[in-house]
Structure formats: C-alpha cells, structure tokens
Image 1: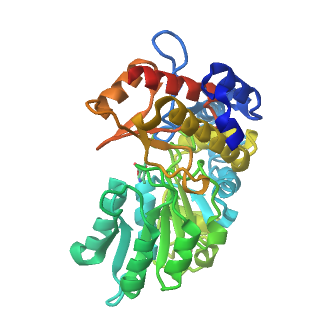
Image 2: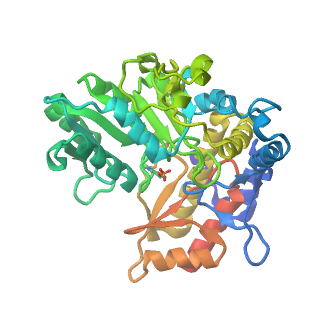
Image 3: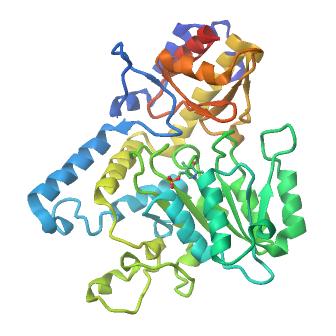
Length: 431
Ligand SMILES: *Cc1c(COP(=O)(O)O)cnc(C)c1O
C-alpha cells in the first residue's frame, strides 16, 4: 500500500476493506479452501496459516482419489491410473522447485522436516579436527536445536565447545547481521556448518539468505536453511543463492495437512557427488536397477538420491492438491504481492486504531518480513495470554508463543482484507 492510502482517512472503515478485496485479483482463491466455522456458523477469522494451513479443496479431492485407487486397484495402483504411486513424488517436483526457486533435480518431497535436517547434516556436517562447529541462532525452533546438539553428540563433539549461537542484543528481539559477520570473521575457520531459518518463527524476521550464504561460503562453511516459515510465504531463489541444502515442512504455508510429507533441497553442485556421505535407503537407489535388489548402493544423481523409503502416497496426494491450488493462484509472485499488501494493511490499521497499545516486533520493511506479524500487547495490567484467549472467544484464531507474543499471519491464499479489518476491530474491542 502506498503512503497515499495509508493517509486516507477512511482506512478504518469496513468499506475500505471491501474496496481492497474488490481490487484483489486473487480474492477468489479463498473459495478453494475450507474455512473452519465459529459456533455461530460464521467463518472463523483464521490467522494461523503459519502453524497449520487450511485445507485446499483440491487436496481433499486428491486424497479421496488416491483412496479410491487403492480400494479399486490394490498393488496395481503402483503402476496404473493417472497418478501411479511408484513415481508419485515426481508429479510434485516441478512445482516444489518453482516454490523454492530451485532446479527440479535439486528438490524432493520426502520424510518430515526434522528428519530431513538430520539426513542433510549426515551429508553436510562432516566435522574435522580443525572445523567442527555448528552455528545456529539462539532462539532456533527447539526441534532444530535438539537436532543440531544431537548431531554434535553423534560425532562425539562437546556441545559447549562446538555450538555457536547468534543471539539478539540485550533488550532486542531481532537478529543483527553485524554480530553474525563478527562471529564468522572470528570463528570462520572452525565452523563446519551454519544452519539458520529463512523466516524466524517467533519474530517473523526474514533473513538475508543470499548474503549469509555468500559470506559463510567464502570462509569454507556449508550453509543450510530451515524454510518451515519461508516456503510458500516469501519468494526464494535457493539455486541462485548457492545454498548448500534446505528443508521445509508442507503443513504451514503449503497447506498439506498436519505432519504431511516435507521438502528437501540439495544444490546442483552436490547432487551428483555420489561420494558424499549419506544415510541411504532403497528409494534413493538408481531407479532402473532398484528392483534388482542388489547390495551395491547407486544413488540417483538428484535430490531423490537422499530418499529412504517408498513415500506415504496419501500425504503426497495432499501436497499435489495443495501445489495445484498455488498454481491456480499463479504461483509465488502474485501471492507475495498480495501478502505484502495484506500485512501492510494490518500494520496500518493497528497504527491507526491501536497506536502504541500494540508493539509489532516483526521488522516492517518488506524485504525483512513475510506475512506473519508478531504482536506484543503493550498495555499496563493487560496480560498477552488473556488477550489471546479473548480473541479466540470472539472467533479469531491466532497463536500464542511464550513468552509474550501473539502471532498473526494473514495468508494471501485464503485471508481477505475484511478478515484483517475484523481482526483489528475485535482486538480493539478486547483491549
Ligand atoms: C514447524 C517447525 C518445525 C517442526 O518440525 P517437524 O519435524 O515438522 O515436526 C521445525 N522447525 C521449524 C523452524 C519449524 O518452524
């Protein structure tokens, strides 16, 4: 939104929100989702796509289609029908690659997020005497933190000596790049791996993945990103940025259902390296000889070479429906355009209606945020958790993160400007 609209005196009216919806070229995408209902029968104001994306109608159809194929074909479903199970993951590759800015050979849908982090570290965390440290952020998602610590222990590395933390400065929430450059400058020769989020889950801060990769790789450090909050939220160019590996789940902004199969990226410069250590399984073996059932592992020279098992096809079906929905919207570019407008509208409305009663800790510059805004209630005597509960009672679904943040994610695929309007109206009433 431009300054002009920000200054428009009508910004706080429902009519203004309706006009924004009327001008939204992908407003109809909302029809492709099932929106949970309040007890009154009205749609919830759902702002929790950062935690669990809503169900695309196409995902439901694809899962039912798959159940039918299983019912009707039994084992032959592996080879028959429009979407045979044997190559089912391949039907998703092209769209997965588009979403994260990769070449098709660099991506695969497999396993779950934390599992993939481990499999990637098996290949990209190869500590030596000289280079054994892993750098993460201080407030990493706990699962990532546990995964990294357990990798250190797995290699008999002392955690205190080998885990470096990039920490926000005292009294600040956001990560400061100068601090990162300094750690890399000082410890670059000892760091084997940097593992960071694309979008920080608590603050919503988008990290400069391109720059971080450049600076770290210049010191010989491998760089991986956890894109749980980035995939389907912001535009990514993993291939061009030269990122070594990345992992993401598909149930947040990729709307594929709780615990659904995850995504994994391995850069082209590594995929054909059959010498690279990996924890192997038969689904990563050369397709033409897989069923000869021989003992010599021959990895597929693509990200598929990291697969272990034949994948859960019900889950792949949900991902297919979800990816087709994103494709209907025209891909990440129009989604990101709308996303910035939606969240800017939220920022402007909060400023107009609530002023200093709400502090937004997410950076406000477009390049440093996705759709999620992390709000802190700044009213003496008013407890943030109570606020969150009051929102819930009024049909607004947000999420609460300890110690003190309400995360609100207006998702361009299914949230409207009117949803945002009602959110701020209800928030104001609750306060
Ligand atoms: C959501 C999320 C996870 C969850 O991991 P799963 O293995 O999918 O349960 C891990 N890390 C980050 C950064 C997340 O946002």
